[in-house]
Image (cartoon, rainbow, N blue to C red):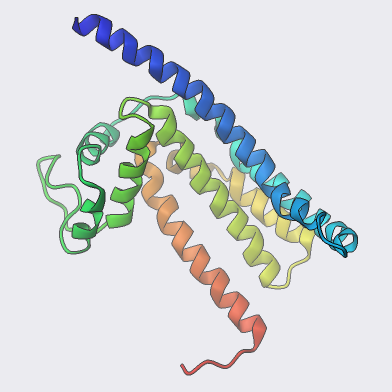
Length: 219
């Protein structure tokens, strides 16, 4: 019956949610340690590991500052625009996002067709639908991961700009906990800002690294 089917879906979703949160927390806490751990297998690993330890500690601190305040959002449900967007992109073919480079992405699901080209934002909803269309936790996890990546990029940019590690860490932590990010991270549809910031900060970091390298290009 429909009722038993819904109960089965809810039970499966609850199990997936619990495992998803556990995996998510494990990745966030272990990722900053992964790189220096690989150095232990090399002959000159000792000195490099000691040199990288402060950076690992700084990155871990920034990750914690970005993740911990938003842990309560993982149990939140869909809200407002989320329903339409999740429903729309959960039924699209894998390469659908490629067509959105030339046409509006929301297909007038809200009664109007805004002149917006957001193919990668649409792709993020398609990827998150793999968690399960009714599993809002998967979507919230992606939002927190995006926020964490942006905070780490701020840390990296500050270091590339010549700031000391404590100053760069402060910049990353401050970015992580700014109240202005609350809606962007807590609301699934707010990822539009996080994805934009991810590409902007990545580009800025690449530019800063190029300027510090003094490499002359053809441009």
